[in-house]
Length: 638
Image 1 (cartoon, helix red, strand yellow):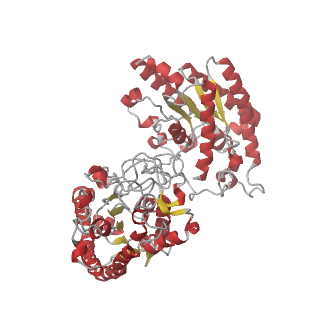
Image 2 (cartoon, helix red, strand yellow):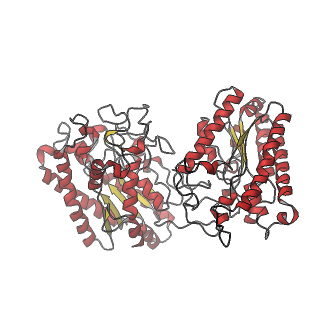
Image 3 (cartoon, helix red, strand yellow):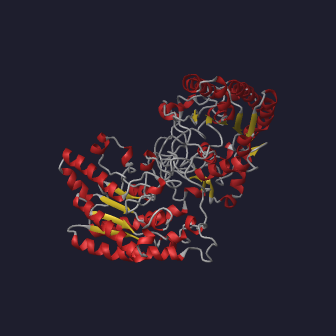
């Protein structure tokens, strides 16, 4: 993520430069993209090529998963589009003819492994060279101008982004076994050839109506892990300087050529992007590991099988990914500032970013489990999220806020999923059984049986009917039966999180003095539940053959975060990050949250921030503090 930060600084510079040079609005009507894997958004998904990124762990930090972008999250193009106030730029190959005519905000023509020269990258398979990308752009322009001559004005105000040339070295000049260029041309001659061909391409784009260009030079290829690791013996310097010297020849020629081009093309503006100088700011940008790739690499592109076939999610607002968006209820999170750090915006998640379920899906190598009510079940069926904000173990819990889906109803929806979606998918019953038995089932429920039931005597009589101990026993008895039902439907690997310290939630502590003290009485109610939970889970594991129940112990962890905030990277563990003002202590719609949400424990009156959920999820996946008797990583190997 820190690398993305340094990129953002560069984009802001480019963006401001465009504004200052042209003295126009900072918003451009469209963004047209040409280049290679640095800018690609999925064109290569449609080609027979090894240069693909449509598999995990690519896209691990986006809600869409592996889209074909060659990174963990957003690309340069995604960030610049957002800065311009534009939607993400779609891949040309993903568009229908109708889309190409009607789209007004830009198209991405970039293709991984492509170069300025038509032969660059072809050893990996089919790609779109710069000439082919420009041809596709020409086709787009012709389709649009047939529709309206006003499109030419739109095009002249749009931004053309060009970042290409790396593969003319990586997948051409430096591959003498596949290409003859290094035998035919000296480094000086080859650089001159590339610049000449690129300038010709830019002239062609200009002739089609474009006027505002951002053109990048080539980065320090000699510092790429793939280049450094290919040298034997390894260089004594961090980078292979001979390769960087090749790049510098090209970059120096490009700069003067762009200056001359801008002088000769009337009305044109060219902004130069210095990719070569980007590495200089790594330390300042917070990048601590600059020579080692984040993902495991080796061999040609191939999908790594996910650790589990699917993740099924049940529970309340701690895990809800948008089911309540479709219900009549006050328990909603489909408005800003919810989702301020989530790539999909306010999706219905009750936090600023990802939930524990989202992080777990990523760690398992799976896309985010879509909410059941959205009817967006993934074709490869990697899971579903049934969780519903305000819901509980008891069917009446949360009804004071409106509609919600109780745990019993969620399991019924899971049964419907099996009957309507899964059984037709699997030809043999044994295959369906294996799929379900290897899948992970995550449950976080019970908090609302206190918050929106037991502690609301005006709406519910449970606190008048049951003692704290008796109420916990009632919840356990029902939970026991519901887990047995889930097991009979095929679930074998189940994670159940205990309840957090509700007496420490800002919803209850905001009126206390001094601020931040916890209500011990409320925490004791939760303690009665949490004490009985591991006994119930052990009993289930003993009587349900081949089942594994993991106990998620979050209560102590959250208390430790409150007592020792700096140990976990928090500055404020008392106040919610967003302005929570109404009776539900939800975020006030459209009011900006705190500036440094990763330093806050609480997002709103009841829910944690993404930063806190990340700690919980990662330890439960591979640590030993949160989940027992084994962690999730051990569970999938079980």
